[in-house]
Image 1 (cartoon, rainbow, N blue to C red):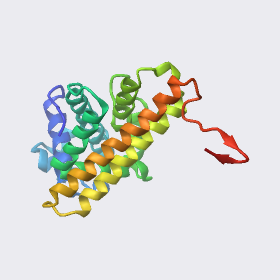
Image 2: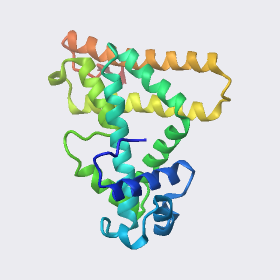
Image 3: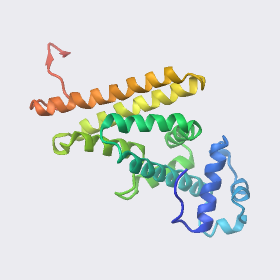
Image 4: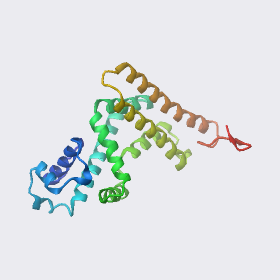
Length: 226
């Protein structure tokens, strides 16, 4: 899924093997080193010249593939002129690459469990470089560029907008997994509504900023937010 050309050949082969097995539906927590090296076509002993253990192989493959996929997606999104176009491209990509989309959300789920793979993956995410970004970073970058008023957004505002956009992407993924592949008109209508919804949410923050209100917060009267 991602570009692995800058990796040593055997690391590249290992990562590609893990991702291939993942795409085939393998349970990462039950994968063995023998399965990975067999798929990669390299010796079991050789792989330990590059990795300390199985968890490092799997977490490394997921992390590298996720960040490379997001980097590639960002390059595509830079060609779009507005937020609607960018979100539409993301949703179309999710439609066209349903298997990869499923794996993306499975990978996110892996990050949330308590396995050794999850722990190693979290370490990689926490220590990633500034120019490396994953799904949340990609959405944050798009939103900051769209708002063009980064200094006026609090960290809470940015986090909220990222979560709002991500929640819609997750909902669309779940919607995709639940409909039949022939439902093109219905799918297009849903995609358009989601794009408009994300744009409207961003626009409401922009209006607050332009009006001098506190972004992301509503006035409260008698305990009721308006």
